[in-house]
Length: 444
Ligand SMILES: Nc1nc2c(ncn2[C@@H]2O[C@H](COP(=O)(O)OP(=O)(O)OP(=O)(O)O)[C@@H](O)[C@H]2O)c(=O)[nH]1
Ligand SMILES: [Mg+2]
Image (cartoon, rainbow, N blue to C red):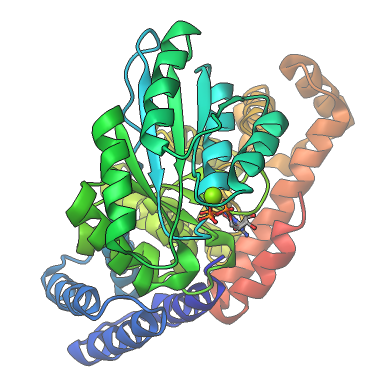
């Protein structure tokens, strides 16, 4: 997913993050590289220009915090702009309450992934407690109804179909069926065409007028880059989309569609398809994608932390501690309690350069973190400040106090020790960051 784009941006972030001074010339060079990377990713040229201009402007106006080097600050700025490009925040489907029938109309070109995505979404909504009904309105392709039925069986979602050549009629009857049998979310799968044509538009308009959907969703193939955006624009002008699902995001190495779509069409990407399986549909989180692209979620949170919670002095001290391996369990505890306050489950580890993108929020086991916290809380202050004094009797006491085992305590101490060493090496030698963190990522 987005391998090519990520590779370029991660390289750039790595170069920049080591820079202690940022001059106009640096900025210009970096911005030029960003420009090339975005164009290479098939991002719309207007979007690229705007991105570049804004970044330069902001970089010059930015107040640099003492605790963060200017390179890191600049990356944060690029990250934020990228989040904006991707659509700011996650956008949910807007459906009615469970006692009323909501409807979702799927449309898009041939082979974009409508039918598969309809089934994926139905399965997802079902797991969230809604009662979905899939409707086969693609009567153009003989096998289409059958395809949906198979998917319906797989997901245990009922499929409404009729022996008819009139999709509008099928759609209307499906709504009646839904009311009668208490389905509350009706998803209409429609026929695609090889390209946008008047016939296709007319047919979908008729269906749309008949069902008055709560959501009109375009399914577009992410791999087609800018042409996915052009398609979205045309469909939106004709049919007023409420959102887009980018399918085949797993196979998209460049990311041009995702990065251009919001600015060009004003429509949000609500989900991404990340594989052929039913469960391969994910909400679209601009923040996570941007962090992944930059490979620098770490620096972003470091800067955010410095800006939002810790004072500049505190952050500086923390960095020094990391560098000299005097970072104690007490600091560790304080850090992740602070993170929790900020509503993020990302552990301190996730803040370290090179690990970003490798650890997603889903990977972090919240329970494991709570266990760790319980263990550290069972230590005395002295033990937290110097974990080396913790011998077998202390371990036993800590295990008892935290409802864990001596093995758990050992594991925590071992991991902490490794992390400290790693922090020291990393802070000293930025070149090896990625490499080291790779090892570290495989440790737990
Ligand atoms: N890798 C990957 N493949 C996908 C994804 N979504 C759909 N596909 C595949 O794309 C192909 C076309 O999917 P369909 O759901 O049949 O597409 P459609 O838009 O309904 O096609 P028509 O009904 O013919 O217009 C299938 O082989 C799917 O398995 C995705 O997110 N990732
Ligand atoms: Mg189909």
